[in-house]
Image (tube, rainbow, N blue to C red; front, side):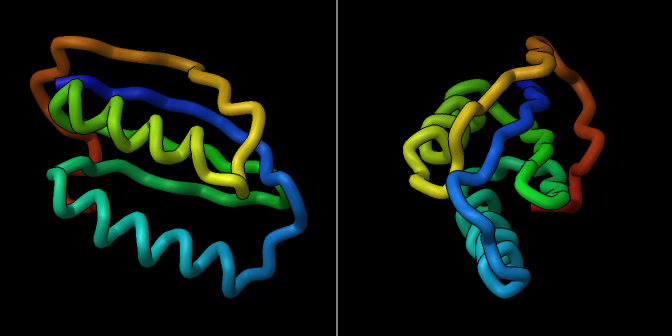
Length: 91
């Protein structure tokens, strides 16, 4: 498995409702591909940890990079050969 940690900046001010909707959609989409993790939002920043099979994590990250609400995606850490999830129950 693979685990990545990244930060990104929003391209505009997002309302609380928009951020909550991102969380809801991410939960559904990530659960479909068995990617778990955590998403935190503060002001104009997102911090996220994604973990799962490498190809699935890479696809989710690519979807995030294409999302017009994100810019300046910066990978803080990438771990390969992960054997245990930190967020196994959180999609």
